[in-house]
Image (cartoon, rainbow, N blue to C red; front, side, top):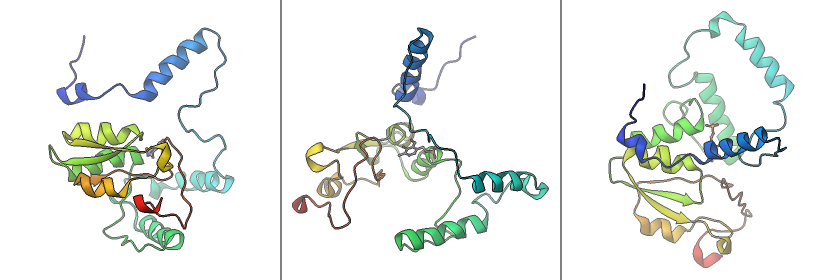
Length: 193
Ligand SMILES: Cc1ncc(COP(=O)(O)O)c(C=O)c1O
């Protein structure tokens, strides 16, 4: 039996990591020893105290039900505290923080919550594939590709952002896949580079 994918799903380009996995599997079957440099899996285990806390919490019956749909209040408060200490940014744990299943899931749901068909979205190029796929294509929005070029040290172009007139801009920093870093004193405006 075969199932027909929806027109929306058919619009998605091949998922790069799936394509790489297929190549890896083929090479390994051929007996080639491959070191995968594709996906950024951690190569160190999580700290011992984190694993111990997980095991301890998993054994408690009060943790076996659903959690608060926005994330437990203590969890959201801990994030707000971290944002303040780490970045000196005030975020309201009541309305500005929500728990996600993962950030990839969050990217597509955030876009779904804010985009209407035809809305413009700035997508860094090169950029993390979920921005274009889950963020733009699945919402019938319009991508505006922001080139991250070597001569600008792969930094976003603020003038481009102003000209694009977009509703959403995706940006992660240091950027995946360029890994660009900026000095604290450096500014990203075109004239300051
Ligand atoms: C920029 C970026 N966002 C999101 C993700 C996915 O994160 P998660 O595992 O939380 O879904 C990745 C994974 O590589 C990433 O590079």
